[in-house]
Image (tube, rainbow, N blue to C red; front, side, top):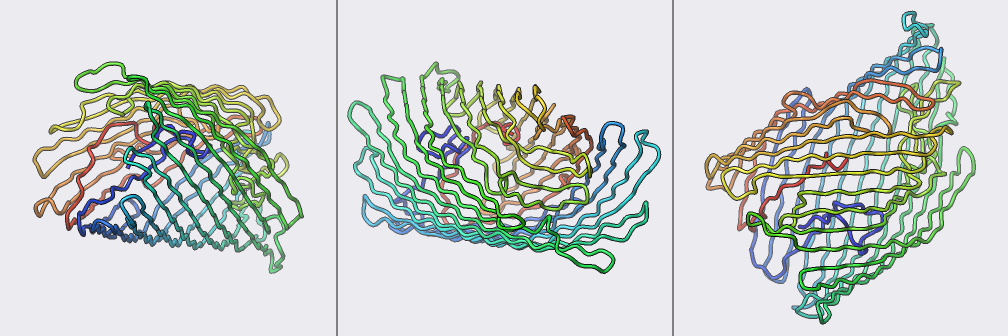
Length: 599
């Protein structure tokens, strides 16, 4: 398995890095092997999981089967204060939501080496989910002084949902020669079905009014088809030529039927009742060429993508939209070894890449989704795609990035925004194109590499975002810098016992124009191997000091709010794992920035 940090022209222009490319080793007879696992994590609430995986390889046939059952429960405590408007009072909100869920996951497949040059594979993935949520939400409205209460209400919201995902992949590979030339194809067909029912009651305690109740059922059906073919040719004089074609099509149909009930009268809620159709077709092709001159490598490429997106809302009003465009995405990669230091080969890399972020289905769907009596989620069918030019220089030590500096120049940025209706004081979370964002980033990592009894890494990443454009029809000129610090320590006290400590801290974070206060977490793991290293007993403690809670505030045109969000992040866990059969050799661990640093 390899992680592609900067995808080349071979990959979709919507890819932004972190792609996991799984490379299967063919012709290696390791027989039958597998593992059993079970774990329990306890906080205020708890999560439990158990499963197994089986792998078999007899040379020509490689097969696998896995199953995992997970029962989760989490909560969210939210406190926020929001100004209703200049001189119009204060809205104070406190809510508590529980999110119990169950998931069954089954994966299986095979790879058959038809001959020394040709192989075919099939992969199946099935995921069945059952999700519920129950929320209690209290809202108090005060006059501008914040002393005299003008109104008080309380709502109870319940959701009950089920979803099923079924994914299929058929792949072929033909080895043209022994140098690495090959022709591959991949066909994917995925189906998603989702259903959700919602009930809510709004109680008006000051002034006293009749209870307003509502209920509804929503449905989401989606099918995705994709076909891709790629050709790699190893040519004389150290040239590598790559080319390919891809076509993908996504069809979605959603609907929601909602009703309101007040004082015994039941009627259709025309605001939330909705029917929406969506179709996305993307056809693309690419060429790229790599050449090595001594130790210097250059790899230019270009990708062409044609996009055809159409959506139609059938109810409450018959409206439609479409996006049809053709775009070119250039790519350039340069690589040069610099020096060998402490046994590590340092290389310098320069990447220039253009990418696109298309509005996804949920962001375009104009259907308003009820969160509470003062908050709705709603899509924006007028969204335009966002384009990013990325320029990065990094230094790697044996293919692990230790220093990176770069610029993301984003135009027509679309992001989640929060708007407030001046008349009703209801807040809408939606998406909008705001203008331009120039993001400068710097990341560095250092430490002692794996191999001995003790190794560690630590590092930091700085992001500085500058937004220019319009927010709620008012000029926007906003700049904010943020830091993430991270570290990992691992001590092997004996051949069968090791201790690891991992942590991160984020300062001056920014998410959808919400400014975040300092937060982080420290996690401890104790791992004991038993039964001749065939089994492991793992004890973990996450968020030891319960510092992974977030203070936030937003002060943009039309919205001024601040508050705090807390989840069930501090947990103690026990994991049991048993391995059987002949296990493949474990890959040597490296050190790199955690996921938090890239956000």
